[in-house]
Length: 136
Image (tube, rainbow, N blue to C red):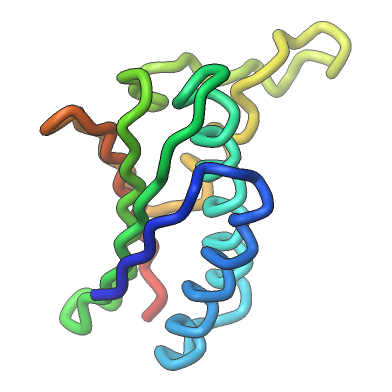
């Protein structure tokens, strides 16, 4: 398992993506799955940066693991910000014209659609969001 802890600042999404990409390349991850994982990283990390700590600052820890038996990559995003379960947010109505849709929620919706599983729990004072993607 790989783990990285970063200040929850937008410029740090690149370091996180580079770490995950390096591991995915070792696993011969298909490009489509890698791009979907990169999108998920960008969306989830950006949400932590934007909302977890309000006007304050904090950190985000991401753990990455691979299960050779199932061919699945798991990413666990953890922060000590405001408790928030993104899976409870109602999906946006993508059939409405863009100007009629409520602002927000599209990023989480895209992550839900591209990952094979997502789980949320609040434990030990931390938000823990797990994303699972089958790559083999």
